Structures are given as structure tokens and as C-alpha cells.
Image 1 (tube, helix red, strand yellow):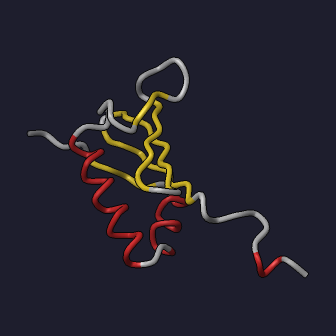
Image 2 (cartoon, rainbow, N blue to C red; image 1 turned 90 degrees about the horizontal axis):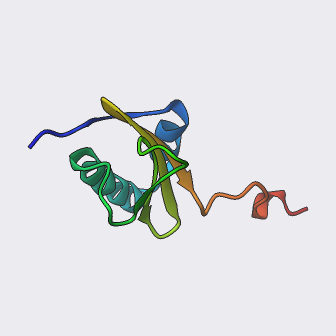
Length: 90
């Protein structure tokens, strides 16, 4: 079985590196699944008219947006990270 090579954007790598160990383990598993089949029908969908721009719901609160073009280019959106959080509440 051929697997796609997954390349992280700079922002995706930063989000991955900042994730706690348990969340990173979930991300690793989701990336392995997408590397095998980035067009899978379960929990993924196209973004727009083309099939190559896609999104996937990797885990509760974590969405991937990615492009399939010889390799999978991945962006991670951690939906638990907010523009305004507790440290901003003053």
C-alpha cells in the first residue's frame, strides 16, 4: 500500500509541537490515517469545488485542513485555542 508523504506548514508544526503529549498522540494517529487515504469518506470532506483541498475532523476540537498534491500539506486548527482567553481577561 502506497502512503502519501505528509508535510506540515510552519503553523501546523508549531501547533503540533505546542500540543500536550496525549493530544499529540491523537494527532499522530490521525496523520497516519490521512497518509494512507487522504480522500477517505469518513470524517473528511472537500473544501470548495475541488477534491484536493480538504478538511478532516481528527478528534474532538481538532480540525485539519489539507491539500493533496503528491504529498499531503497539513494545517492544524486547534478549536480549543481562542483569540481571547483567560490570560487576556483583565
